[in-house]
Image (cartoon, rainbow over all chains, first blue to last red; front, side, top):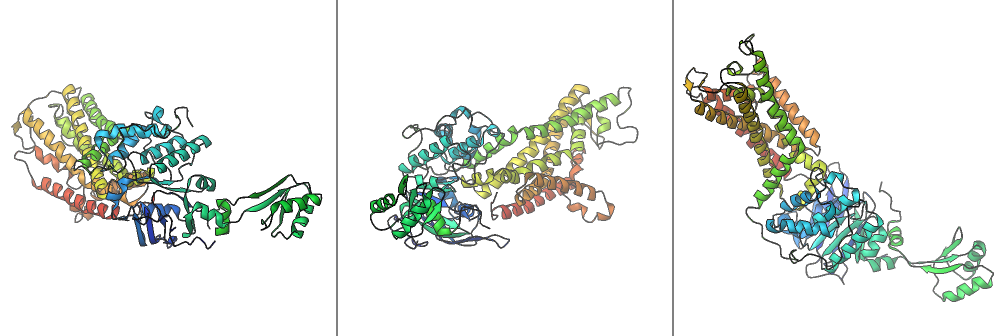
Length: 326
Length: 306
């Protein structure tokens, strides 16, 4: 996996601004001495949908909080839209919509009043268009019918939608979405994904943190992987997935024979699991391999090369599953 | 998922009133007042705020009824041992004195406790609910948010005091005669003059609470728990009130924020005796300055992790 370096930005995606988000040696050590983020060099190209991956406790949220000016870095720099953070917060943040660690709402206010309050906190928001923009944001996330309901009566999915609406109150150049599909049902997830694609097609850069690898794979053009406070890799999703090789999968009841024949044909890394035999795909003609299996009397029910997923790439990179980092 | 939700809008369905990307307005200089107005509306529409104000309004009502019942047979209120809050004996002669009695009765504990709840919750409550991070990335600005919060707590001090005063005035007018009144110095002043002094006293009482308001706001910046900040502020209030009663601590007592609170009674002298009133306002300004700066220093540098 050395094709994609952890420090070099993807040359094809670099733009004049050197990235909508750019960090150099960004480090956060909490007072207890715990190193949450360690020398992060992250570059998010403009116009990308950028997936930010990592197990729980890998430093994703601390990174996002530093980017948004909520936490002061111990060392290193973070630039948002080309301006230093947290110094340029007031100039930069009106262009940035954010959903950080889930939505946070005033339970005693209605959904609409929650948005009116967040909008009133934005110095660049025009009070004359406030109500229209709030109504448009509610409409966009499908909450118009529940706008007058107290937020404490909202379901988790509705709160998540309201949090998204708050990020969409103004036209944004960058959206930072931390686990945006958390708590949503499959239909809601699909709606969020289509919303993200729609926003991206309008030219908004979307920075999306998620623990759902297939979600990242479906919507993201670029991705970065963090583990234990360090950036392991970043680059275009296609490049990342290509780094991990696919697997040849033979489905058969005669697993013992199949494994023997595959080994005889010189196929490496043969693994038998239930009614499947998996192996490293060979360089030669696959049809010949299949013919050899059939000739040997193996009842082949399925013969396929499974494309490497981002998950395979992730496991290959971190050497671990998606568990909490100890 | 509730039935109230409808699918999200698809591309191209965005209403035209939404500005084009990049058209971000320059901040209006009046924007801070927009945030302040929203903060005031949010605070005073909360059920908790209304409950606190209701409790405060109940105090003069109860005092008025108690005095009325006690003096049915023509005896004077608090006459037995001379106990009870200041001015209570004069209420039967003039209902306006219920205003002074009610303020004297609520100032030592009820009023500052209500302020402690609102001030203690100001930042810590937002942090607890997580809404603080969204206000900050909006971006509200840390100094502006803190100033807005302090202004709102001050507004609550004023409203809370006026609620007590107005409830007492209405109750006094309903239960007792109104008219000319006698000052502590024994001179007579007109009812209109008396009403003016009542308003002045209410303002001084409200100003007396700015010290604990600043203290509560500072404590509120220290923690992510609204309950802890409220409890600490109210606990400090009780502690100081007790320490203020211990004679051996008389060297320290002039620095307790509550030490000159009851000096507002001096406004009922003719001529007004200003020394303790000035001491009180000076002390409140000192508290507001010291703890306001401490709150600012803390809040503008802290890591917001909640």
